[in-house]
Structure formats: structure tokens, C-alpha cells
Length: 414
Image 1 (tube, rainbow, N blue to C red):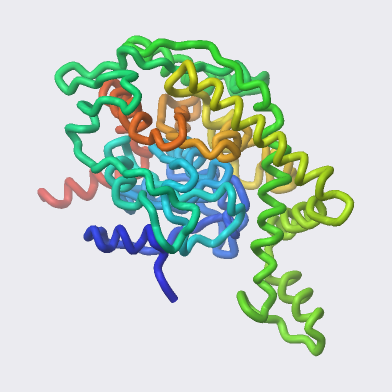
Image 2: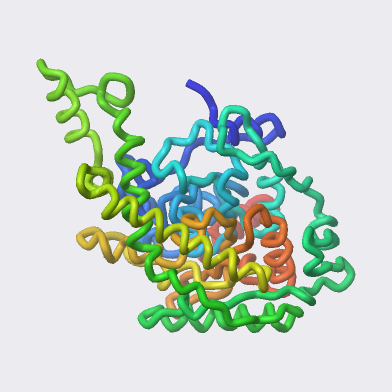
């Protein structure tokens, strides 16, 4: 019945909206397999997932269906698909972009982000969708930098950390923290080596790499899967077959609720709603949800303390490249572990950007993420832009898409 604020702003700017893309139901998933519309496939290898929950958007951009796409990031749902599909994806600071019109999953975690080929694409779309919105009380009134391609390489950082020069772009003076907690045992070797090679490239461009510790990182996964399902349980209570959603008829009101939710919610949504309802139930609220919120504060404090001496944090986006469709279907925990490196940024509310840094032996993209202090998206764009000026990973296309484009170009001139 109405457009989200971000969509209205893009339309007002003259952008053409092509349509909606597939997503995990209520954005609950890491593979875009949990959808009533079917599974989305990764353009790089069709038997692989594109990531999730915003896998439809990522696949559309990777397949050259669109130059840009919106997505939402509650626990990594922009950065992870960007990594799996060889794209650049931005998760803004919580409160930087309006959530009006966004279906609520985890209200304290949800952020609207975007996919593109490179940092310049994202700087453009970010400048259009970011900013205060009277329809969303959580949005911040901190000014949004205007998009300007020259400013992307010439703008001096707010905190005088580094100066980028368009004639000789470098990262001189930029301090990048590298946390040991993100390089776990079991990470795919090609992922680790590609990320470390990207770190070496950033160092060659002038950045200083500094070891940092984020000691509460190991608790991010259990904290997230208490807080997000608890908020989902409250948010999805409105889908009762009366006010929202489809209705399955029954004589008694309680039976309408039961039948509607029982037959219309998918398996993953039911699982998370039950987890959240349990965590909020009498006798368990303080033990689970309350305790999770306390640990969340510690995770946020880890980042704040780190950013007192560094400018950005670099880490892998995912422990593996895109996994096979159906690989984690019967093992929810293994699916949840795919988000282990992206969840902390959402819990802390800080911005993050993911971008391609290589490929594994099967030709699947590998991504790295940079995380910054609150409202420092421009710093992320600048750093990624300079990295992409020096590398070509973001210019690669899925082989099939490349062949199709070549055929189209050949027909134009035949």
C-alpha cells in the first residue's frame, strides 16, 4: 500500500525501480533457501547459494540484472551475500538509514543497506537513502556527506586521521586493526589467505596494520540468537490472521491464531519465534534475554575501545565461500555459524563494508569486510575505493554472465 522511505528517496532521485527480489522469509536465513518463492541460485555456480537473507538482491546485481540493489542487514544479510556473489555491499550505522516500510525482524539490529559493483556505486546510493526520517524515530540527524566522485578521494577525514589525494591515492596514516578472534581454526584456507593478501595490499597502499583484541567476539553468536529471535517473537505477533497476514478460518479466535501461524509461517520462522518466545517467557527473561543484552554492551565496548587507537577493523566476512544448496538445511546451527564474523557489527550498531578480495580453487568469490566507528561510512567508502583502484577483483564477472554479455555485444555489431 505504500513505499518504504528508501524506495521513495530513490524514485525522487530519478532511479528506476525494477522490482522486488527474493529473500529468506522475514529475512530469517543465511542462504535465501527459506522462501515461499523458491531458492535463489548463485550466478557464479548455480548449485551454490547466493548467501542470505538478501540473496535475491545480490544475485540480481551479480547477474547484471541491475547495477544496484537494496538489501537489509540484521546479522550480515548484506555483507555475506556480497561476499558470496563477488560484490561490494554496505551495512550502514544503525539509525543512519530509515527503516520505515521495512518488515521488522530484529528492531534493534535491522539496517537497510545496498549492493553494487564497487565503493563508488555504494557511496552514490548511500548519499540518497541516508539521513533523518520523521517516520522513523530511530534515525539520526547527523548530516550525510554529499556524493561527489572527487570528494571520495580528496575528502579529509572528520578526525584528521588521513588525507586522500586524487593524484596519488594512498592510505598513509590509516590505522587498520586486525583482530585474532576473526581468524578461527576451521576457516577455509583460501579465505584466510585471500584476506591476508588483501591486508598486505592495504599495507602497501600506506595503511598501518595493528593487532587488536575484541575479547567478547566469541559470545556474539549466542547473544544474537537470543536477542534477534526475541525481537522477532514480539514483532511477528501482529501476524495473527486478523490485523496482518493471511487468515486460516476457524470457529474460535485462538484457533485462528494457531492455524494461521502454524500453516503460513515457514519452518525457520517458527523455530526463531519459538526460541524468542522462550527467551522472553516468565522465569527466563533475565536468565537469557536480559543476560544477552548485558553481553551485547560488552561487545559494543570492545569496538569502542579499539576505535580509540585505530580507524578501521578488517576481517573475513564468512569462514567459507558459498556453500551448496541444501548443505545446511538439516543443521540449523551450522547455518547460523555462517554469520559468525558479521554478527558483532550489528550488535554494536557500527557500519561495515564487504568487498571481493579473491577467489577460491573452485572459482567462488571471497570477500573481506572493514568495520568503522559509528557514522563513519565515508571512511569505509574511501578505503575500499583506494583498494579497488589498485586491484581488479571487483571487475570479475561470473563466467556465464560474461559469455552472455559478449554475445549481446557481438549481436549489436553484427
